[in-house]
Amino acid sequence: MFESLSDRLSETLRGLSGKAKLTEENISDALRDVRMALLEADVALPVVKDFIDRVRAGAVGQSVSSALNPGEAFIKIVHAELVRVMGEANDALNLATKPPAIVLMAGLQGAGKTTTVAKLARLLKERERKKVAVVSADVYRPAAIAQLETLAGEVGAHFIASSADEAPLDIAARAVKEAQTQFADVLLVDTAGRLAIDEEMMAEIRSLQDRLDPIETLFVVDAMTGQDAATTAKAFNDALNLTGVVLAKADGDARGGAALSVRSITGKPIKFIGMGEGTDALEPFHPDRLASRILGMGDMLSLIEEAERKVDKKKAARLAKKIQRGNKFDLEDFRDQLSQMSNMGGIGSMLEKMPGMSQLPQNVQAQVNDSAFTQMAVIIDSMTPHERRFPDVINGSRKKRIAAGSGTQITDVNRLLKQHKQMQKMMKKVTRKGGMQKMMRGLQGMKPPPGFPR
Image (tube, rainbow, N blue to C red; front, side):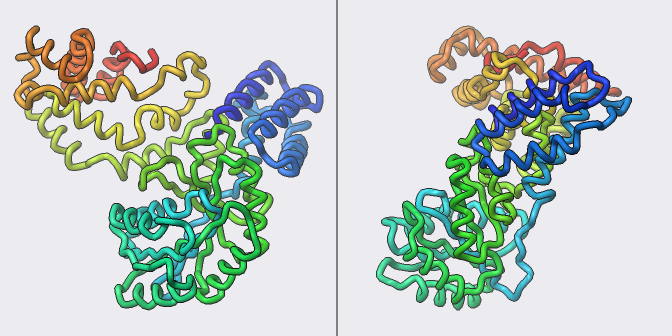
């Protein structure tokens, strides 16, 4: 998300180096480039105009601190304005009411409402320790109810059954009673969508909102529709008492215009952002962190939080004890590390959150992919348990069998074994005095596998 906008802004800001002060003259080209970058990102025109006016007012005449160059000073102003446009800080879900707290989900057909219901249920269950019930009041779309039932089973939410021959209001009333008897903390209600906004749909959702009196009414919008997302959100906001917006499918939008337009046009906060197809791919929306990523400054806080949630701490502790006892880091341990990295979205997702990645040349960025690591995992999976525990037994004939079983070449198997040897040496250094510094030197000396930038 925001790749094109980030690239354009980074190029523009580099052009301000060598200036002693930000003036109308030396920022005019930068502002023009920022305006074009925002428009190309499909940000709504009124939002772009207001954004540029406020950046100009904040930048012109500002003396540059001795600690900052003009480009950095301008970045600081643009960052502050991006944060303001997107909402200052994360606006958390309000669940402070008598259980069950009812959350009504609205949106157009195909926006990703049903999947978002499952993602939100999982987030509330795992991070907030809430007991969640879900129900579908979509009696029009074929298999909508069955889809939610399947997803509810995946995320461990209580599914309240409904059928296409029931009225949505009857489903909602019965769902509240069942959620109460199940002692659910939260009830998520999936509503019907349409291919376009129509009065019949709005009337139905309004009646559901009146009957349920939900503490939250979230509008789910497809981020890939750009500024149309903000227009649609405004239409729903005019008809309903929305409390927030969920940007779905944001990982498929390289422009990011919706994130920069929705808050300004609707006045409603973006509460969550969907960054993938998996049920774990929903994150609270943090404007300051996203602004940093847009400007190529990374998002280390999100990366650390993701590691806290997704890294298996028991496995990590076992591995540390194993190495401290003098045992070798074997290929089963290596396979676990690859799996942990995959759980965090892969190497591309991790590096995207690291500062400075946007400054890498385009040809290097294009090489950052998970294919090499996926290949490594497949090769290890083609080994016997004995080979994984004792890699030194892998001779020529075994390499030939492993390559055939994994659909790779013997050179790929050799490369994996070499990488593993380097990892073994690093793991030993970590357990000694000054281990971290030695490990970093080891990292610098490692030759990266294909698919990983040098």
